[in-house]
Amino acid sequence: MKLDLSLARKYSRPGPRYTSYPTAPHFGPQVGTAQYLAELGDPQVPVTADFSLYVHLPFCRSRCTFCACNVLITSRRDQIAAYLELLKQEIDLLAERLGSERQVGQLHWGGGTPTYLTAGEIEDLMGHLRSRFAFSEDAEISIEIDPREFTTEQAAVLAETGFNRASCGVQDFALPVQEAINRHQSYELTYHVLESLRSHGIGQINLDLIYGLPYQTEASFSRTLDEVLTLQPDRLAVYSYAYLPHLKKQQQLIDPETLPEPELKLALLSRTIARLTEKGALVYIGMDHFARPDDELALALENGDLQRNFQGYSTRAGLDMYGLGMTSIGQTHNYYIQNHKRLSDYRRSVNAGQLPVERGVRLTAEDHLRRQVIHAVMCRFEIDIPAIEAQHGIDFRRHFARELPNLEPFAADGLLVDDGERIRVTEAGRLFIRNIAMTFDAYLPAERDRPGRSQTTATYSATV
Ligand code: SF4
Image 1: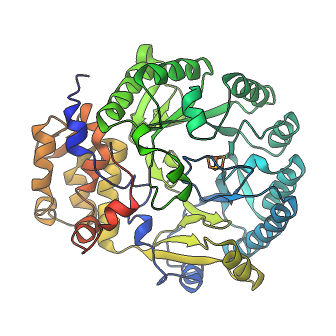
Image 2 (image 1 turned 120 degrees about the vertical axis):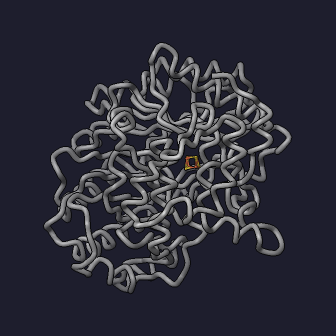
């Protein structure tokens, strides 16, 4: 793929990753526990037979300065134990509402550092989940692992309790980068953790890297890619660094002068795609994901079944998702729902016997339509205009008359082709997929027009 690096500066601007639409900044207090309960109890609302659970475990031992996750730094085990008790109460509240007809098709533990829990705590929490919910036989049960917080005992418990996928953060193996982000994690440590997982039968391994971190160069990141390939991940996420120092205080410890410019970031991504897909080692799924050709994510891409949710690309993103734990986000037919972000609010709500919802958004028919268009861009790299028209009863070109002229610069730069029936993103266009998707986001123009600092700038990371 021949790439014009000057496009990086042209298109680099703050923008969403579209793990949801409307995006999280548009969630508000107009949606709370009452709306969530009404949605869960309404027999008219379509539900998926299987559902997905996300469990948020916010604790970490120390803070990585690049981190944008919702974390609590603690060394107090009693604080973790108290949180786990609250979580179990919330599980009971949700299980009561969902009833026993449906099954868990997907469970993910994220954080924070889920493996900051002891083996005993993992066993106890998973036992509680299994006692309250039925799991489908082929359920995907996954956990985020920090190799710096991992023991063989934990590997054994994860396997015994049914985990079948592990996601390991790496970020970058280069030492200057690790020093700058306060995260020291050697290749050897990562290698041994993966060995331990695989020897216990947890064979599905995802690895996460980040490009756009301080001091990264093309040469250093190439070395990291080579090392990562020797670890033979089934899936590899290579995220663009979300630098938001005005929102994430710890990121203020990162000197902005040490961050790669947009041209270098684009070169890093382009080189990453070339290196990882060389000789068919991995398939480029889109935006930030790669998978082995026989992985179900790659097969879903081929079959047009790929979807997107809060965990990025997924084959099971069509399932209703229920969040558990502080800050977690769920998705039902009509709503996005987010739990309280402060531990004290979460605790108060659960102790009062309430599902601890802080905010959310109810999707309008227009939101449903635009979400489908945006996800078609992000997951299938094309908009099938007759299909969208048939499903939503609209004249696509008339409905999006204001937006379509904004696609012309992408077409002129060879990033997409509009043949009348289909709007298709080209190979080079995949590197600017967020920009193309933003064209159909009805909320962004309103944000840009707001006086003072634009909320777009304040909330989203750079697209390139
Ligand atoms: S990157 Fe992971 S380990 Fe580091 S602070 Fe964030 S959640 Fe914790």
